[in-house]
Amino acid sequence: MEETGATVVKHPDMNRSAEDIRGQMVQLLPRLRRFAAALTGSVADGDDLVQDTVERALKNLHQWEPGTRLDNWMFRIAKNRFIDTRRSYKRSGVVAVEVPEDALSVTGDGARAANARLMLADTLSALQKLPLEQREALVLVTVEGLSYRDAADILQIPIGTLTSRIARAREALAPLAPEG
Amino acid sequence: MQTEPTHETLNAFIDGELPPKEMERIAMLLAEHPDLDAWVHRQEALRAGIKSTFSELVTVPPPARLVQAVKDAPVSWRWRLQQFAAPRIWAPMGAALALGLVIGIALRPDSYFTNRDGQMMARGALATALNDELASDRYTGSGPRIGISFRNRNGHYCRTFSADTQSGLACHGDKGWAIALLAAYPRTESSGTYRMVGSEMPDTIRAAVSADIEGEPFDAIAEKAARDRRWK
Image 1 (cartoon, chains in turn red, blue):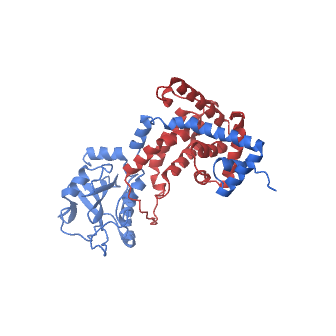
Image 2 (cartoon, rainbow over the protein chains, first blue to last red):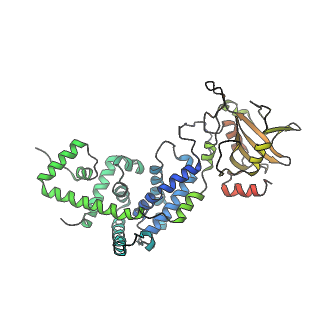
């Protein structure tokens, strides 16, 4: 749809170059990857989602309101893209949990790396069993360490809804928690 | 007597989301309720476990293909249109304007324009920029700057630009770049010099682009291809 209106809100930082924004997006990649892996249940699928997300974000950059947080906006795109396309991330109904060897090339310590891979696989598969709305809420708060306010903003839900989703997610994951 | 906190309150406690006084109250309450305390501990361990599991992912550099995607993916042309520096002081005139009409506002006898058989043409550094520069080129901060490029309904290549105190639209023809539209930046009284007061394209130019464009503005690849064909 063509925008013909002349309503342009000026922001002091509006004069960013595309290079600045691309630079910020590169900085955001690790966090986006982490979020996407937790969402899709696989590092490889997560990376596909991240690629889709950055392409989408750049293509729709005019929809980002300068002065607001670029990271929150991109998390929201990632979450929406996942909902739109998640069928393509599921292989014949089974969520593939695959952690490529090089995704976790923890320096030197082979045993630790192997252990980390195992833990990641366990956690990914446990998260996959959560309903999406609980998973995304829990991941934003727990994995990304976002405040309830930011998480609710990204998901565009009231904080009360967010907290009840987190509570339900935690109940469901409780068996994973170490005893005593 | 204090009521037992709900799991939602305990979750907020775990996530550090309660006001300081409430955090204190819950901490004291937990000391008196071993069962609640155990629940909180388990959930805290789970939270830490999940977080540390995924934190491994942010310690490695992202795959090259993702970095490349960020660097190569085309940027919204509407965004580039907004960024293309110029004020929008000529909005009231916009509706009356059509392509091919030149408004010679603030036209000084400078080196960017020349009159050829009654048609204003780009010359000098402006002609060079229109010929050679890509929107993705890093702008050095001086000289003409290229905005967006597109093909118009007559099949000509057109490009928006800003140069010094002006902002305009030029279309390529047999004799070079014909200036289709030109608008000026307003003069800032306080400093007495021309400067950019806004960051968006003048509405006149935006309207002209919208009216005359065939399809969408070029992405970086199409722009480079057109440049390499010398805009023919």
